[in-house]
Length: 124
Ligand SMILES: [Cu+2]
Image (cartoon, rainbow, N blue to C red):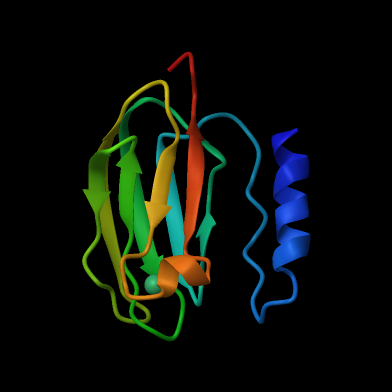
């Protein structure tokens, strides 16, 4: 059901200049690679394990971007504002029970599409 919704979202977003990569399916991951571009996040995993997660953020776009990771109202990670081609590795602590939301904080980027969320495994 989730994947159908994701595919529908991709079709709806398809009129933009760049389509985000489809969210991969598979077992929950302990590492998440985030690719940033105008104006979307590409993710290496569709679900995360609860616990420590290594997050590798790469700016694959042509403008500066950052990413803030939140669970509920708790901020669990934040990258620097990265120039095109730069990357940064973060160690974050993911709690069980609620998805991790990702958002670019640069003005207008989130509303342009730079926000998404990743599920967290219930069984952790
Ligand atoms: Cu951005």
